[in-house]
Length: 163
Picture 1 (cartoon, one colour):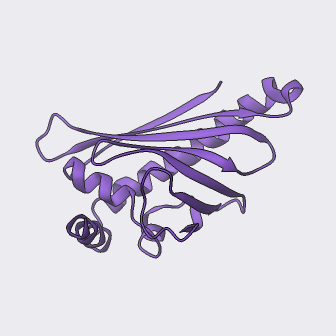
Picture 2 (cartoon, rainbow, N blue to C red):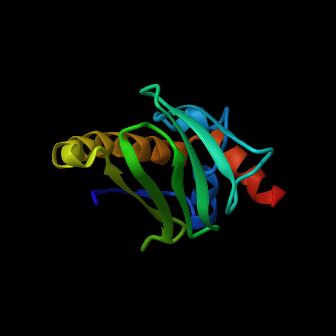
């Protein structure tokens, strides 16, 4: 099963780095170049284990995902519940760890997927790795920029005090 990973070191502590990663619209759109539309489903108003989200990507593809792990400020994981026909399985995990420089965080985002139909997998997986790697690198670069954006940081700090 293909795995794609991207890493960024950001100038905020893990609890704030995690909070930035979980910002929602419209703040989310300031830093996340991948997401064109995103919202919670099923009446949820905040993230957490078992919560589902609808996401439409910049490519126009839609996916409903579910949080399968929720452990602020260290990690969050999700799996696809429904999505593009060519994904048999899609999952991702984001980890946040203290960097060697005090007050900084190493963010590691990892995605795994399996394409269908099976007979196309050898080619589809290679194409998927190339596309997803490009998107995840752009996305984590946007996230890193968000970790220096005063408006994004203010929203993330408000979310921390709301908990």
